[in-house]
Length: 274
Image (cartoon, rainbow, N blue to C red):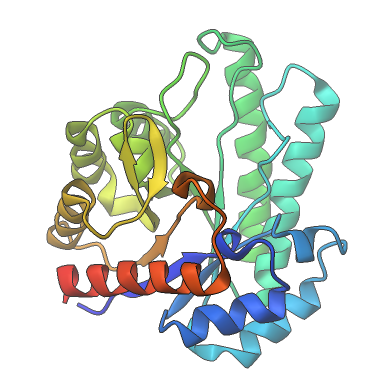
């Protein structure tokens, strides 16, 4: 089984897009998950043709995956303008993905605005969101992977049973498995996601979680290594996207620091699944 090891563009968020693709390619990865909100792209009105050009220039990273915008957004917001803008950006992401040759777009499910369990009205907004994504997926041919969230009071899509229920109801929808989010509940929850939902996984975000701190390095994390082994044994063969948060390191990271960190994690994943 040949795995495609990628990394989120947001780990190099302070650099220009053309440099990010070069760094990821030179580091030895075979994929990239491009966040629409990567500042150099987001703040220049999302030039889709430029992204397509990077994909053509770095065929070893293709097909890339795309992460739809989620910062400041919430498709299930009680504020109708926020909800509408959030849905619009998610749908737009599928068009950008089609232009760039990406096969999968990862989206977030949204959340209840108040820090309380989602209500019937929140689920109605969620259904409208799913409807818009379904239509866009049919029009573009791009798969939509809904990502599991950290379990909080107002979260949707944050337990294995919830995810399986939605996947059974929405047979067109796919699943992006975030290991760190799952581990924030428990190791058992992460294993249950794999057991119940691996048949619909099209993307996996790889990162550790300790003491509530998310998206930590893979190297040295026995729990993440165990999850990768479970994914392999379940037959998963899609992208494995390293998702690290540079704020978790307690210091500013230079480019050399970042490249050394991702090289260690890439080697760790390769050794685990090789």
